[in-house]
Amino acid sequence: MIIVLKPEATAETANELLDKIAAKGLKPLHMPGIERVVIGALGDERVLAELALDSHPMVRSLKPILAPYKLVSRELHPHDTIVRLGKVAIGGRGFCVIAGPCAVETREQTRNTALIAKKAGAHALRAGAYKPRTSPYTFQGHGLDGLKILRAIGDELDLPVVTEVMETSDVGVVADHADALQIGARNMQNYALLKAVGRAGKPVLLKRGMAAKVEDLLLAAEYLLAEGNEQVILCERGIRTFETATRNTLDLNAIPYIKQKTHLPVLVDPSHGTGVRDLVTPMSLAAAACGADGLLVEVHEDPAKAWSDGAQSLYPGGFEQLMQSLRPVVRAVGRELA
Picture 1 (cartoon, one colour):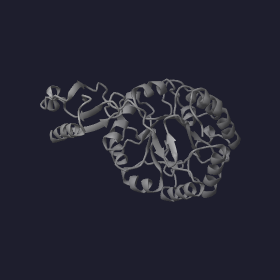
Picture 2 (picture 1 turned 30 degrees about the vertical axis):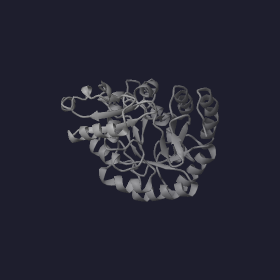
Picture 3 (picture 1 turned 45 degrees about the vertical axis):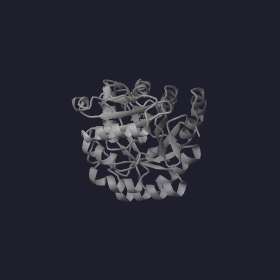
Picture 4 (picture 1 turned 135 degrees about the vertical axis):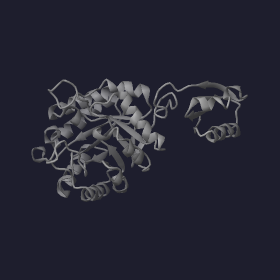
């Protein structure tokens, strides 16, 4: 429920109402604005009705939050959220590019690729220390050793590090080494993991599941915000359809739709979204044009020798060309590529 107070309502009045809401076992929310004060209550509306807030002299109106996702919804939070990733802002007028190899293979490979990404203009480094793979016989990542490599390279090159966490038991150690925790497509509805990551105190990059509706993605994000973490970035990475020409179908329809429904920033992963190297750049430009806040791109120093996902990873020259091609498109839609 959204509770709009009258302009003359004082901070003391707002705090009094918030205390009453909390006393009923509901979750109180305080959203002070420039022209009015708005508070919120999450929980059983029948319990909220017992407070009879509509009869309070300082309450102007009550408005139910119709979306099943409350904290994620623009109904409750109309202004865009900007997530800080180190010195990088994701959301607002900026357009962010997070790039790196699919996996941490060796220290040299990871450092070389990170240097390539930074030189071309990437704002943050992505790579997997833990790798969820369809086959149990493929490379699964180096785990803690991979995290240590990532952290060292991120510190050396002054690049924020984004990496995936797969297990609730690993949340602490990944949070100790990464600037943002990624929840991959396979774990989007792993609710125990969502709750644990929500409590970790680090920005979260939440990828859409392979067969998830947009509403499913937003409800997964709700779990993170419900744990007190508002630093959440959504990521469209393609969904499974009947089409077999590409690895997945990159759902760019979802970007403007999600931007209408939620205040959270949204990135696009054209590497997993297509699985085809030659399609990464055109789909990246399309993502920028349709309102995405940035990209998550796979690049490798030598994709032909990559231990995973080489077919969708850009060569160094291809990534440089992508960054150059992005600038006029980003500028045309009123954004900035730092």
